Length: 292
Image (cartoon, rainbow, N blue to C red; front, side):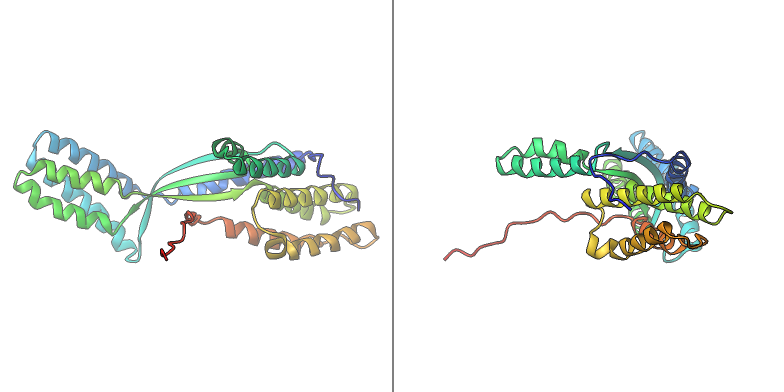
């Protein structure tokens, strides 16, 4: 099969487009389902307690703190090993519209700009070099809140309202934001192969359609690599070997039954690796050089 041209963005199959959107929604819904109502109510009650402290309503503030502790105890009783409890989920899609050649041109321009000291201009370009669904999960650190709340009660009883409020505000600031990055090119490749797998197992499958889906998946993987979502030798070597095998099968007269099964599994495994919170990027630091 002829190599996919990098300067022409292949059109996505209509069915694949639907499945990609459905998969994006599912990734978000999966996180939303993990939101615990008790944790959400606990956060809302903390805000209410701050308001009560402003009004110097001591007894009501202590009563609400008892309510919060009760809700947190329910969560801990359900899972003693629980550390973070989701309370909010937001999503954002960034989808670079260009081709692989456009990506490479942008990366070259970024290098030139950084070398010439135009860091902010390079940053603006860099921010667009992404094709991903970003899911931001705000989570309550379950170990922090009960300790802080219990420490606040004596302060309220002593009517040290400002000190108590300060501790509560600090507790709110300990909410953790986790980021899950789902690369859209890999998701599109996966959904294209899932579609190909379905069609290949039908009676008298259209091999040209299967070739198109395979070519589209291959192009999307190349785009994923260009955008930095993995490396060929580390993440995609087995994938490309499987694609080459399928390309040969589709050129021959062999049965297409289950020929996409292995590739489908490999792509699903890659996607599963992305479906978890991304570790924060560590900023490089200059080495300390001892003066001679």
